[in-house]
Length: 255
Image (cartoon, rainbow, N blue to C red; front, side, top):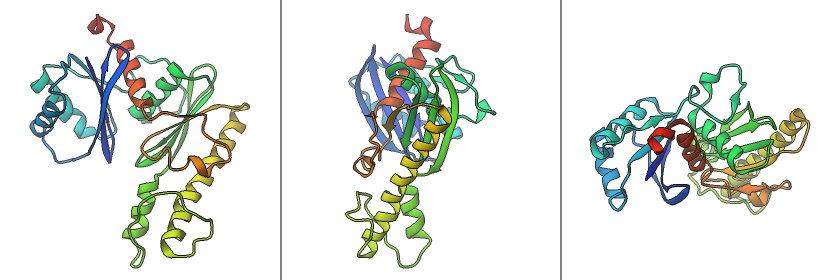
């Protein structure tokens, strides 16, 4: 079985595949100081009923890449494939500095190519909200990186003396009648306006309508706020892209 690992700044996504079928997935908090042995013991507990014989790692946290690689080698005898911009992929990165493209964004783009009509815009709602744009010829053109919903909420509450922490949810009105509603209107509705506006601007530059795919933890929060609805909400898109990229890069290992 294949283990797909997506290491983000806030959470680490883990998914088990048997062939092309996603069997199970988990999200754990990213603990930057946790050692390889600690992650190894944690993974052993999670995957005790599975026989893992291959793995792929996408990571935006450089030091945890090697931590996970070491844990998988020691506890599962698996030499994980590390995804980067030099890996074989079903897209051509045309961004000015290919090395700046995060592995998670490469996985999202690969998932879009595998599963959806092109051109496509993948909107990933994580610590940051990112747009990954793939044209009809499978060129990764670049995209957008903005502070995510939780980052905005944390910034407001931690950098002001009177604004509280809040649970992110759809605001009832654009005009907040109390502090919580005003914050939700600004963060959630404001973010929805940014997303919708940037989809419009991106499609203008593409010169045609695109397939809009939302993924990430907060992808469903904004859905009702949009006039232009997402064509698809696919919370497993990154995992599917990683599986596909492992297949492309590790054919001999896959047998």
